Length: 398
Ligand code: AMP
Image (cartoon, helix red, strand yellow):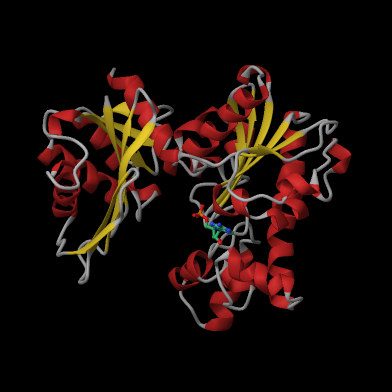
């Protein structure tokens, strides 16, 4: 069965068609600037050439129409008709406490997702627009919602509660939810498989280090803690997000810079992280690494502060699980940046971690990078959120 995976943002839409039996990607692409002038669709069949077409996309329905046309047209299409698409898997950012697992999308499910909109006002409405557009164009095809938050719903209360008046949790569901769940789940399972161990018997720490970054502690196959919180702003220093800060900073900066709370929140979300720390040099680690290697303070301080925060969380999560068997690095930086991995592991010798410096000097490969005698295994595992969504979808519609 072919599964169409849709990841719909407010003005963009990523898609992949995946054969659920062979788990091979058949075609993939991206619609950009939906609803904005200059929109374009990028489409690439597996093994074929990438096509970029600038064409008007006033809304998401038009974007999905173009995706389906690209997948089925006679010249570059990969299927003969829409009937060859057995199901659609939608990435949904926030499932609140309602969704601890993926689910078949029904009218009731859509209402329940809408009820979580306040928790992710930038993401959930866009995800729902994608679902609506697909349902219009493929009314008979089953759809599945796969939630970024679902994998973390196994966290115990002591891990997800904040030290706030309890009524805020009861009235407004203010608590830690965590994100990147499909990635944490995929990578931790893959680690157990690669090590030939039972997932249910392992203590694994997953470091998902990309433009957005989060860490999770996975004990006996269940997430027991994760670094992102009510929103994806908490935890690690990210591309442009601050991660953990003293909450008083919000008021302090608002006063000093004469900004509203909304304006300070925009700074924390869009102008902070490694971009802000490097004095706007870049949010991209390739640029930061060049600066680090040139011995510039902005590159040095930024990469050191980023890696230090990761190292602190790894130590904390080893404590949470009373031990750790494997540490996995994934996503853009985790997969491609030996320097960050080296700096993170530098202070973890006491846990029984020894990095093989030569093996660590690789980019984008699935690989064990600890020495054979390292008590804790350190691994690079490229994440594949689309495949994880396709698997979940297939399991539910089969
Ligand atoms: P992501 O959000 O997972 O796409 O990760 C984005 C981050 O990964 C950026 O900071 C990139 O610099 C980094 N990244 C992606 N690919 C590479 C690569 N081939 N080499 C070094 N860094 C990379």
